[in-house]
Amino acid sequence: MKISTNQYFTSLNKQMTAQQSKIAETQAQLATGKKAVMPSTDLAATTATLRLQSVITKQTDYVANLNSLDNRMVLEEGAVTAMQDMVYRMQELAIAARSGTYSSQDIKYMATEAEGYLADMKALANSVDMNGNYVFSGTATTTKPFVTSDSGEVEYFGNQSEVSLEVDGGYKLRLNTSGHSLAGNFDRITDDGSAIKGDMFAVISDFVNALKANDTAKIGSTMNELDTVGNHLGGQVVDLGVRQNLIAERKEIAADKQIIYQNLLSEAQDLDYSKAITQLSSDMLALEAAQSTFAKVTQLTLFNFI
Image 1: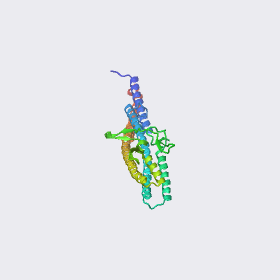
Image 2: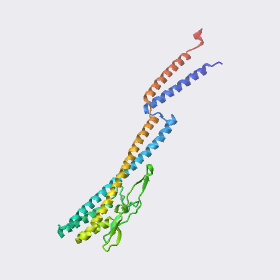
Image 3: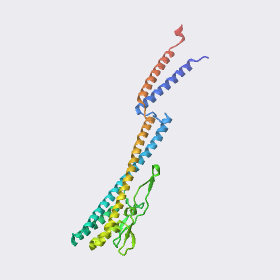
Image 4: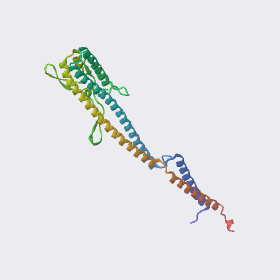
C-alpha cells in the first residue's frame, strides 16, 4: 500500500493540531482551576458538579430554616422564662400578704405590683418575631392572640394549631407554641365549691383582685393556683430546651454533611494541579517531537538521495 506525500502531511498536521488543542485545554484548566472549562469538556464532571451544587443549596436552605426556627424558640423561651419569674414573684407576694405583718396599704402596693405583672405577661404573650408575626397565635400569626375584654378578662383570639416536623426515629419536633398551650387550662374551684376551667391569666386576675380586696382566703386559694401556673410554665421551658437541643443536633449533622458535600464537589470540579502540570509538560514534549518530525519530513526530496 502506497501513501502519498499529501496524505502523510495531512496526517501529521492533524496530529499536531489535536496535540495543540489538548495543550490549550490543559492551559485553560490551569487558568480556571476547573476540570471542565466548558460543560462539554467533561460531561461526567459537569453532571456530578450540578447534582452536588443542588444538594448543597438544599442543605444550605435547610440550615437557614433551622437557624430561623432556633431564633424563634429562643424568643419563646425568653418570654416564657420571664413569665415564670413573674409568677414566682407573685407567689412571694401571696405569702407576704397572708403573713399578717403588712398593713392594708402595703397590700395595695402588692396589688399594684401584681397588676403590673399581669400586664407584662399579656405583653409577652403577644410577642412578635423578626417578621412581625405573633409568636403565640398558633398558625393565625397575624392575629393578636391575647386581648383584654371590656369586662377585664384576657381572651385568646389565636387558634390551637401547632405545626410539627417529623425527624429521625419518628420523633415529631413541634415548631410553634399556641397561646392556648401557653396559657394552659387548669381545674379551678369556685367559692361555692363548683369546678371550672381557667387559664393563667384568669388565675392572676383573681389573685390581683384578691389583693385589692385584701381577701386572705382568696389570696390563699389563688396562691396554690399560682404554684400550678408556675409548674406549667416550667414545663414549657423544659420542652423548649429539649426542642432547642434537637435543633442544635440537626445543625451539627447538617454542618458535617455540608463538609462532605463540599469535598465531593471539589473532587468533581476542581483541578489536580500537579497532575495537570505533568500532563501539560508531557503533551508539549510530544508536540515538539511531532513538529520536529514534520519539519524533517517536509524537507525530504529525491534530490537528497541523488
